[in-house]
Length: 250
Ligand code: NDP
Image (cartoon, rainbow, N blue to C red; front, side, top):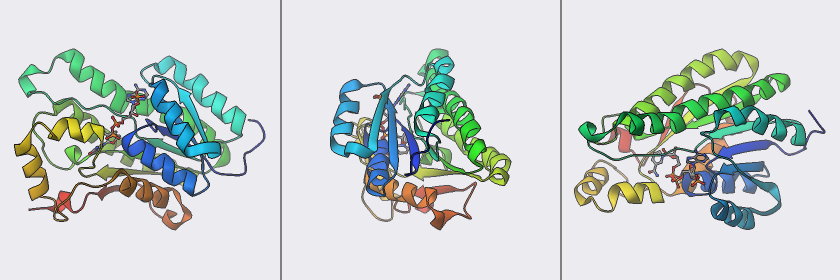
């Protein structure tokens, strides 16, 4: 690896919009050099404009598994290390159970689980050289309780929670902490698609969220800053709900 950057270096997948952008924004505020990966060039450019010097964007489709090792080693070579990985990129699909095709199911699993595994494996190889690192997987309430019409998404986020625990026990002895954040219902394009044309679902969400309103993407951003900081140096293997109480709501 090349000369080491003095700031911490983070990769945030899907960091050009919604929750990922909020995480990248909070990282930059905290002087973390943040590399955003996404597919939509326009979104990437906008993010770079608003985040400035401490932000770099890379256009890459994480479905391209065979391209991931070169992507990661290029980042590590240019910056000398990778301190933080946030696996935030994800897709949802709201459809009745009986209408979900094998292709639909595989597509969600591919993005939300398989790509997460592949990029994590490659980043961990770099982190092992430094004997330190922090990984956050962005999970969902869909892995905490049953939500109808999101079978593939639920399977994928439940797998992610399992991976978080398995990674934590194997990697923590090597100095790499692995945690997940389970956002509740956060105001982004993804949740708008799921809730806006479905008043009954929205009512259900609000009625079991004790705080009574949707979260802001920044609520996840600040939680991520905490989890990757030294303030969380003894925290590993947890799935942290950031949800206005939704996961314990009646
Ligand atoms: P968005 O749709 O705004 O963000 C998803 C991001 O993932 C986009 O920036 C997208 O970039 C990126 N992405 C998707 N597929 C790929 C791919 N193949 N390669 C590279 N980038 C990809 O949604 P949110 O911000 O709401 O979601 C972010 C995460 O938070 C997801 O994992 C989601 O499951 C989770 N979450 C969201 C909740 C919510 O209420 N909003 C609740 C619980 C969890 P591009 O468009 O450039 O491909």
